[in-house]
Image 1: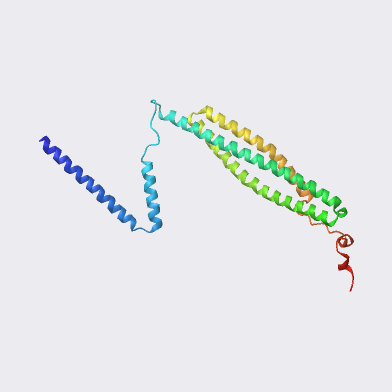
Image 2: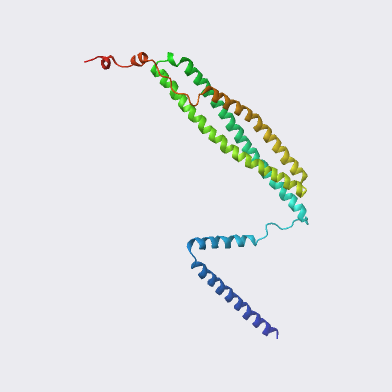
Length: 233
């Protein structure tokens, strides 16, 4: 009887294996008949589905689910704090560089306006080219500030969400740390933003970004023209 059961088990196992291979081959054949785009999505979805079937983490040291959730929420706040710190540093640096560049442009423009008529054509052209490059740098830095500010706002929102999640999960220390990081980041950005607004105001009032080039007197322009070109035939 025992031998009969072993034979029966082997037959059943062989049948199940053949059925599995047959089903797999049938599915693969059906998938290959799909359009290319659908087939790629199907394969990707199948791979993801296989990953989802694997548990993310086993309970360790007899910890409760609540304890594991608290631990996970703490890890989330650590990540968001790092993201917030880096985006704050990038934003503050970009604002600082922008303010310095505006100050340089405004100072250079004031000098150009005050002494432009006293410069030789070569000197005037040299100063004007520096102003043009400085204007372009201001525009480029302005775009950088917008991009970094967008990243910073995303980090702020993520940090707020992480702090709230940690609080709801019972990770009070992680929540307090996240809220402190938020306050520090906002304080630094508020300070540099005041300088940013002041620089923007000075730039607008000075018209250093959109003023026209000074026209030199005709007599001064003719000084550099060779005499041979000024004689009449």
